[in-house]
Image (cartoon, rainbow, N blue to C red):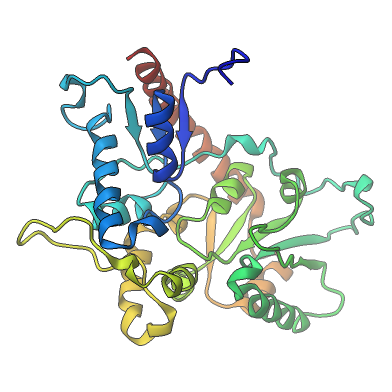
Length: 340
């Protein structure tokens, strides 16, 4: 790239290993903005864990947002370490005993907004029927195996409704890392979306929220039984994922493991509930509605019990408020990083 005259002024990385090595090799200011599980494969042996913590601490010493970082003389490019959710922030703290600021992504890249009355005739879909409501149900990617039973439950719930109901369900299965296979514009054309999270820090939530699509999420008790699915899958392949890279100061309160397992639900449910209750921000967002039962949710939608336009409006107002707060933060931070 340098031979062609293309040189990056700033790097944005969502995994620590990428952030560290690109920062060292590229000698470019870097933002580490994690959205995924902090611990990765190379950190599970004793030797690798030491090196992983060393790399994290080295990034931290050049972090403009850490206390005193600006006063430290260093020849290395500056770094900013910001995380995408409270859960990711506290899972990093669990491992490193370092707390990073959390700034949720606004996902403005989606470029689509809620338009429930639009039919894409070019897609080959039939025109909408008068009063028809189209509900998109996202149950997880197939590789997590959760989507099969989830979609079956929604199909059964749909059979309980009258045959003439205007409610139409769309139940994509997903494929490997693909969640739904739809464009953002297609998602924004649905009347509402049901999101059954496979993690409490799922990017799909931020994308749906940015489109202001009315969203239904399982209530916090149900969520506590659902979100460890991805952690269970990852933990089976990596039994040392619970490793703490640094010992906590004596008498300091500590989190339980951020990776509870559904295989030990009787023992781990309290841990699942702890994280869902304190660090899942999904239910606290304006416009998001929770449900406790699939049949009750579908019946309520069939009966028109939810004010979806009002919910979308609340999401739009919150996005505007957050943008006014977050945009100056990122603009100032990028300016400091590129001018340092």
